[in-house]
Image (tube, rainbow, N blue to C red):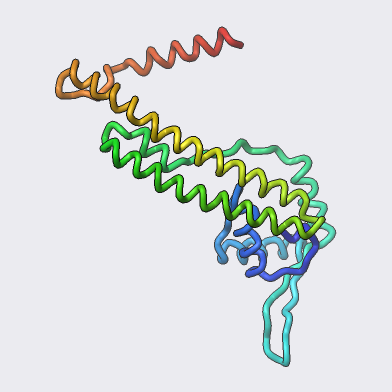
Length: 205
């Protein structure tokens, strides 16, 4: 946020992160914000001053330095880009669906739909608000991406609810033709499946 060259407090940065990069990257805590600001100031990437009013100690404001701008620009253009890391708590619960009641799995997905729809609406509102500032053209593009991402997440969850009935039918059929240990898979079968999948990848390459 400081790369837009506005003088901001740690509180400002936290709130701005919440309605911008928090939709698609990370929303840091206040303690993390202030910790990173101290590190940046130590390295000469930002400067700070205390804004006082009527003799009362006020808030500390931070501003990016030319060295800081150069560092951010180099990172944005040259640094390796890490692939997205997906840790999807909802999907982990669905993956363990054989231990759950199908209706409970559907409930988990419905709650997830409510959450992502709320995030979609927030991203859409913030993207519309960003329209007022031409310098925010790329942040607005990112917010529009976030809006579409959460819409897709909602649609995937809605489809998964429909798919649960088919998965449950498969489990029931397997249980009917197996011993009391079902749905434990056949020991070692995952090794064979892995070999088949890898062979398929090799052929496609």
